[in-house]
Length: 404
Ligand code: FCB
Image (tube, rainbow, N blue to C red; front, side, top):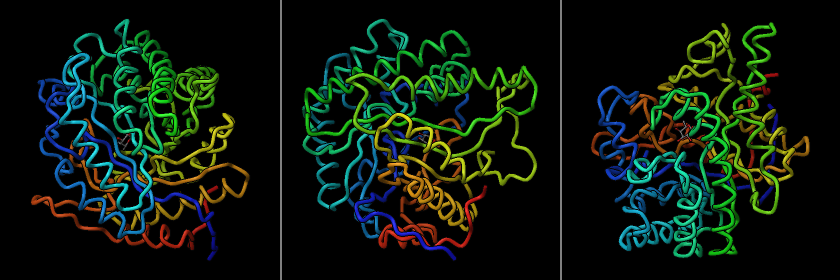
């Protein structure tokens, strides 16, 4: 058994996003997508887990489970229900939410855009509208001015690459487009929107530390041939390098969020652009391949930006909670190894605090440390206690070496 001690200031917690937990997000493009026949969405987000009303109990529970940080998002569709028209009631709601969070002593990571858009923004062209960057910056400035005192860490955009890939190439998220040109364009707009949002947040809330959260899968070619390697280069550029190498200049932000789930094999011959994981890899409910050392590797790649890093998402969809305990140990061991190798990583936020609405997959995949029953009762799983032991002590006693 190896033992690893994390730095005393290391942040430990879990992440959620508004649409996935709050419920009743009816003014968003996602609600529309869920209710339109023929889209990829399996079911409605409905009431989600009613976090909108239960946030205070939820934070108290997470605090009791050893967390000292928490990531959540402010819902743009609620905050700005019509262009330039901000909802006083919504912002006061989020002030109560963030005050309750601060009262627990947990450090807040607040995402401003986590996949969902106001309907009106989507209808006007979404990220491809000519004024998308300015319109997003206006919203970010408003939230930062109103809530900046409660937002020590602000994340501008969650996973711009996945917004572009799922929404504009795979058609798996709104707006449901499958167009390589628009995919590339959307990604570049989102990167620009991050820079604009950094400026807006800094103007309105100079004390907030602003960052971007990127999804960094460990990408590999599915075969050793020229076509596959060249497709691998293209996908790696559009999913990874564009964003990491694009974090330059004064508006790049103060920190970088790394979100890692899996190793993925790109395949130009596959209609989904990716091949199934080869034999021998454990697969999750999502069909994703478990590969802990990938987290160590992508942290090294992210460290090339020179920014301080936080793991802002990492987790597994499984019905078998012993798999989640194992996933936690092996992935946190990978973070420890990266730290040991000199990577400046300062926190680990697990995805997710609760079983919740997993976008087009609906409620079937269960990513939570905490289950939620049909009466909205929260039921911590053994993995929540395993994580609490690590978070409360800052110490990992790992039974398994990190997979090479
Ligand atoms: C990430 C998303 C998050 C969740 C996890 C499983 O891409 O940011 O909302 O859906 O995947």
